[in-house]
Image 1 (tube, rainbow, N blue to C red):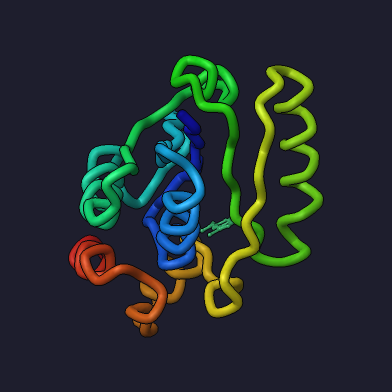
Image 2: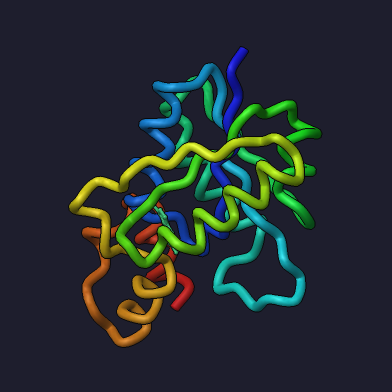
Length: 156
Ligand SMILES: O=C(O)c1ccc2[nH]nc(Br)c2c1
């Protein structure tokens, strides 16, 4: 059984994230969408809220489940018996850092990383930019699943 972990902060989950999840769900028997928990970082949405949104937007996929991890991602992957980490690559800016992390993770644990090029229409989307635009009253409905958009407007 092939199992992949798609890690992220998902604060909030975007259409870019959802596209990667959908494509990974086709490629693997099971996908775990794992929200990173870092107590020292202030997030707009709580862990519980992020898990609720992730659960709602991944409900249509029968082979996707939601989890959280603290500490090393590769420790989580081993604990969940996941063979690979899936990451989206948006543009050149992601590449250097993601390559370094992938090589370090493989060195530490043997867990490999598979990169999926984000869909061009999502390549410029990030959770932080969406929050910034929304805080300034700009339109972000095109970048978010509807339920996430509703939650974001309700939170800001
Ligand atoms: O939303 C972000 O911050 C973010 C970052 C990095 C990313 N790589 N692939 C995707 Br989809 C993606 C999203």
